Length: 466
Ligand code: S3P
Image (cartoon, rainbow, N blue to C red; front, side, top):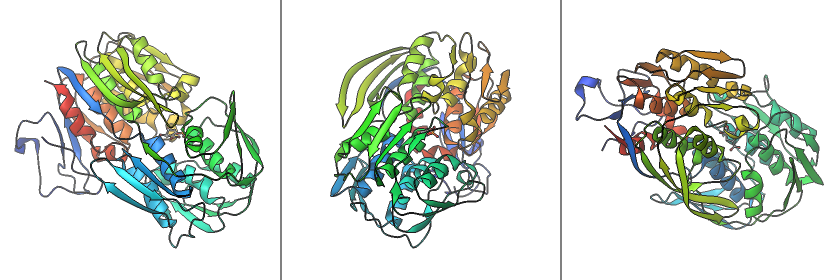
């Protein structure tokens, strides 16, 4: 079985063209004539989706558990840690801050972290956050409370992403932060912080978590008012490590000076990665898919409601709780797909799943309209533009707006050459659209799927029937 072996920067020896395939694969990740080392996925149409999937650990939870384990007292053991490059960036930064950790079981992705008890080491080199917005934003809340200066930087895409949303409140708490145009690299001089009452201008769980991490080290009680309720993994994780975090409606509170204790945990499967397979199953009326040990946190699971509204049959056969996070097993059956409108709080709740919903929109009966999604323009790529360009290349009519997209339903798509725009969720979303297209689809730069889900192409291959 072929698997996606060409991670970022890896190169296949020699020139491989479709004519030189070793066997008739259905989905390939080949390095075709790109001297740059980029990979191209070739995705052929499918007849059905059937099988069972267990997902690597949730990315949002993996980042938070690793960071909190790094500043807790005592050891933590985190099983099913995300296999994505983003969560590896968090571990790299923790090493640079003197935190000892080890991957002790490769098969179970078990990471053991020795907590520093909030006594991080002044780094002797920049903290390299790679492509990871979560790493730079959330970790900035930790280093802002530490008595040293450090530089946080990342790749080209990360260097374009807006950081004013963490810079302004961290400065108000007493940190000194320098940056050009409020984008990485950030130079942070940390130290004693004071609590703030802060009305967040942007609905962002990364910002909320950053400020809770800073608030944990500040003098007094930090109060954050969210414009819309965002994923609550930061609050849930802090409680799992022993802190008290208050919540009343959209306000979250944390008292500074609390100590954390290491934990032993198994990280639930990533719902945003499962979204690709759920949407693949939604494309075929006879599909049957089981997803085991999946994160079902209500602030993350809005996708399930939307897919049910659109016609997919989803039943939850097992539900349990671990460290405050809900985990379930899903049975999914395809049906004819209706359309949907996604706006307001739903847009914020579905922000990472919108690319794949938009990519399957032409196959729905009434199409999908997405509003209030300006944030998509400042993700790993300008996702509104990336989606519109790729759908049009596949032959769809798409209305692109400043804050969203309107994609008509009942439009057949044709396979063609697409760009991932270096954005993992775009590469994976269009691999799903390709399953119902006419002819082969080539996705250039497909290796970026490894940012969140390196095993994506091999897993997809195991679930599709032709
Ligand atoms: C995340 C929050 C979201 C999401 C990102 C992960 C998190 O970003 O898009 O992939 O783990 O808190 P924003 O906070 O920028 O909305």
